[in-house]
Length: 600
Image (cartoon, rainbow, N blue to C red; front, side):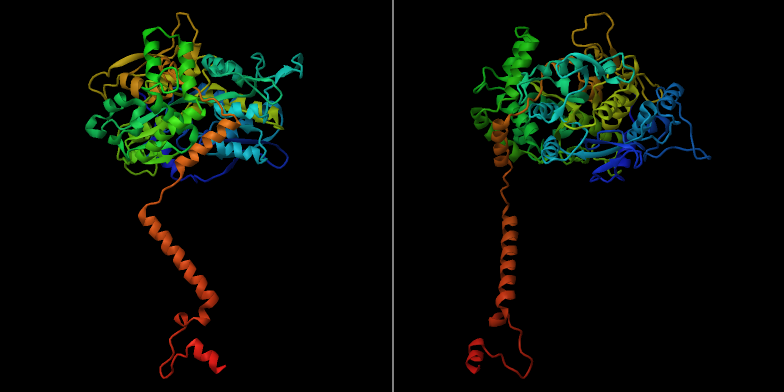
């Protein structure tokens, strides 16, 4: 198969500053400013590891470009070809650099070329949705944010967001103004290229109940957000662990793997309440209904038997995975405590490295991180460029239901809407969407008006027998992605299929990055918590995360406290307490404090 050359990503990351808070785009003091707040490592940052760089360089085992005696080897790329280079020059006014330009810089060039105005991007990053939310409520100002689905709903319901321009006045009457959703506007790349599957999810709020804002107005995702990336959650696992039996054991346990003692200390959970509470609901309600009408397993059995419609199945699992009432919390809390006892750690971004290093066997992960970890293990090196301890990783989606997530672009109140919407449209050009998707490992919401993204998916994961590397052809399957490229309700004859290796299509990169429709059918989207639910869940998380100290830690803390207390006593009373007084020189004797006072 054709594989991404992810070795260079690992090596390049060793030279990046992970704590870098802000990246600036091009511009000068006379430019307008676009303030973008995005997830960490969630955009093509240029250089090694980018799609353009990797396509135009042949890399050796160390991830460095192979060169001839003149210091260069020209590589022909099926996608970054002469047509692509001509498009790039027409779009930015610059010749394409084979070193991999930054997407932020390209946006600045395109914006000035398109709108006749210089622009500078102030680009900063966050680690969790909650971190981003706190920045907003503290008064920090941005033009564009990239929250996940439930946070989009929360921000909209609380009145923090601007709507996308729809060409109408405040009464909904068309007034000839700019319309972000008009496919006839040349610069409106998003509406022309977004996947029909994604557009439908944003149209009906992914099946969640329609909310109302503080003014009683109904809230739809499509009004406030444009999609960016999407995916599933599942387990990255090491198939050789437990003497090669872990895969079968994971399929047997499903969500229950989280609390099984056989993987104690070898599995991680996410260090945020939303994802880990979701997982605990999966464990708790997998086989038992408790206070719900049915268990997750019972719902799936009815769906598989054809006695439960897709809509009713989605509604059933969505209800379970979003339950936050007091009774549910009391039922789930013991499970969360058991998860805490059984895991290696709570983590947000270290699980990928721990998997490749062989420290753990299972990492509960977002699908994009799964792709990254699988690629990294396959490359043979870890994130520091050292030999990896794990050569092969796979991805498993719980069969009784899991999370389908979306990250999207929203505009806070007071945003520069024109520049923000232009940024979203620029990222929605298929050529830019594939660059982003390749760099970060997640799946873009862009399907492409034409053939570009389908060609890209086939280029990454389509299988072609190579007799120089394989003795015989691998087992293949026709991998159907019609739902994503043509829509869930498409009934025509033109299917969108990729001839792929069977393993890649059932448990590896293709399966993670472009999940099949049968996986989508058993996914639930997270709803947002209202104020009361948030308080209940946060209190629960505080109880779960309350640390119990080991004996050695108690000893260290006790000794430290005693030392500090002794120092304070010495400073304040040392001159009056004989114990702290210096020993007298030879020929002299120590006069006790009582004797000294009598002499005085």
